Length: 257
Image 1: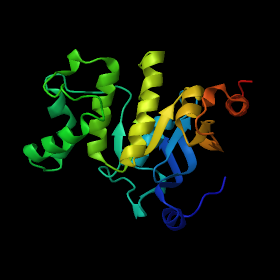
Image 2: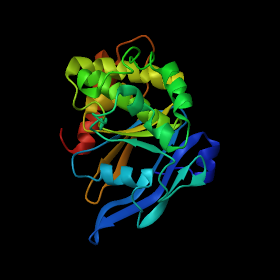
Image 3: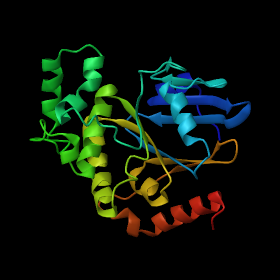
Image 4: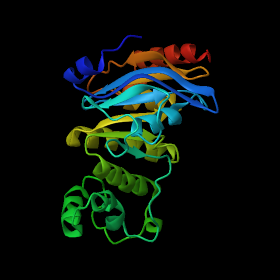
């Protein structure tokens, strides 16, 4: 698979570019020769079986991990091994149970040095969009699973208002709530102009939520396949012949068909 160089990618609205990343643990390669890009406003999924190195890659992209080889570019700037530029939401919401929802969601703003009153004003403007209006003083244990995730999304958004990494953000939700969250996230992402790269093991979820899919396979893990998705407006994509054909294609690539 051939991708543009970092400079060309940025000129083509690629907010995030990963170039030739390799990472080993105890001299054993975990991921190797990873190339990907995420353009402005896209929702892109990283799909693969457990143990293929997806979380290792996210650690490198977020700056938490330093690659043995390769670079990560954010808006054309080399951010390899530099945390704080790209926000990262883990599978668990990790809300602080002793803090109310307002104090939870504004935490990244406070850590950036903003005054609490200003941070609260920013949060109040977005609480209705995130379905949290009226719950500012509630504590996490009083919220449903979907509401906790929306609070975690808002906190992640305040950490970086341009691009976010999501590690299986919907996996703990029941099927109905998950479907609702997919629709909400797509609408919210479009409204805020958010760019997203997310990890999932769920083929249906990747197909329904994404603009493009990167398939990660092998040991060490590599990007083996890139799938741009064509969807028709005003139609339930999951009921179309295209959806089934895409799913078969992915299963073949995974060796599961």
